[in-house]
Length: 416
Image 1 (tube, rainbow, N blue to C red):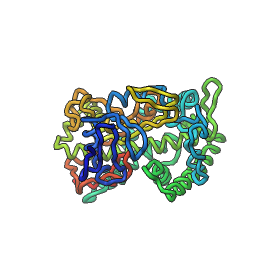
Image 2 (cartoon, helix red, strand yellow):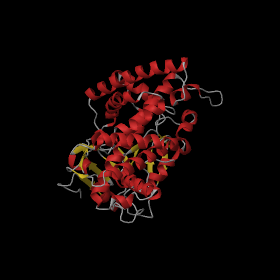
Image 3 (cartoon, rainbow, N blue to C red):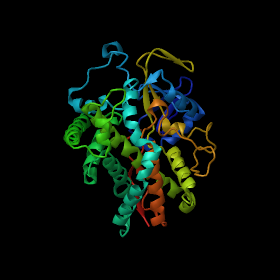
Image 4 (cartoon, rainbow, N blue to C red):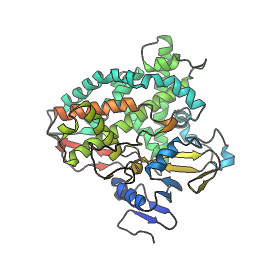
C-alpha cells in the first residue's frame, strides 16, 4: 500500500516506486524522513516525479559514481534521434554553450584532457597557500557585521568568501564578485525541478553576459599574461593540446558556479548543524584535526547537493535492474550520507565519529576538482566565525531554498 498524507512522500514497497514532489515545501525542508523510509524499504527505487531509477544506499551510490558504464553525458555515444531526445531549445543556446565544455558533463577522452590542463591549480599543496588570504577575508566579513545585533550569515559571510576566492584565483577583480554571484545564481536556477521558461530565458541572458565579460578578460590575458588561473588555462599545453576560448569560458564559469554554490550551502548548513547540535563549538574546532573532522561531518550530515544523475552508456544490468542505453539514474548523495547500514546513528550530528565518510564531493573521474579548496574555505570559515563570535546563536528558525537537490538555506539569521 502507498503511504498516505500527511507525509509528503509515498513508497510502494512491492513495486519499489516512490512519489515525492521536489517542490513540496514539507519535502524539501526535510528530505531525510523520505530517506529514512527508503533505507528501511527500497534504497533502489523508481521516482515517479523524475521518471527514472534512483539509488539511496551508500554502497550503491559510491559504486555507481565510479562505474564507467554510466556517464555524465550521452550524446558522445548516441544521437538525439536514436534516444528520442528533443532538439535543443533556441532560447537556451548561450546557457547550453557554457555547459558544452563543462568538466562536470564531459566524458573521456575530452574530460581527461581538460581536467589535466586545469587540475594543477587545485591540488592540495597549491590551494593550501591560499589559507592566509581566506583567513583575512573571513575576518574582513566578520568586521563588517560584528557591530550589528543580527545578520544573515549567508549573504554577509558564506556567499562572498568563496566567490572572491575563485574570482581572485581566475584573475578577476574581487569587486566583480557580486556581479559574478548574480550571474551564477541565475544560471544555477536552471537545475531546479520543473524549471519555467521565464527562468530559462533569464539564465540564458546571464550566461550571455557572463561569457561576454570573460571574452574580454581572455583577450586581455592573451595580450598581457598574468600569474592567474585564466592565463594558465590559456597557455597550458598537454600533449600538444591547448584549450579553446569556449573551453576556457566553460571551465571558468563552472569553477565559479560549482566552486561557490556548494561551499555556500555547506557553510550555512554546517553552522546550522553546529548550533542546533548543542555541542560546544570550541570543542569541535579545538585543533586542526578536529576542525577538519567537523567539516567532514557537516558535509555528511547535511550535504549541499542531494542528487547527481548519470546516463547508461549502453545496455546495462546492475544489481538485477536492466537499463537501456540513454536511461538516466539518480544518485542520491544526501541519502547515501545518512545510510544506517554505513554509519552508526546516521541521523546524529557527531563530529567525533570514527566512521566518518561522505560522497558529497562525488567519486570517480568526476570527483570534485575543487574539494581541497572547499575544505580549506570551510575549515577557515567555521574556525574564524566561532573564534570571533563564541556566543553565536540562531535568531530565527532556518528554512531551505526551494531547490531540492541544491540543498541550502534561504538565509541564516544569527545573533551573538
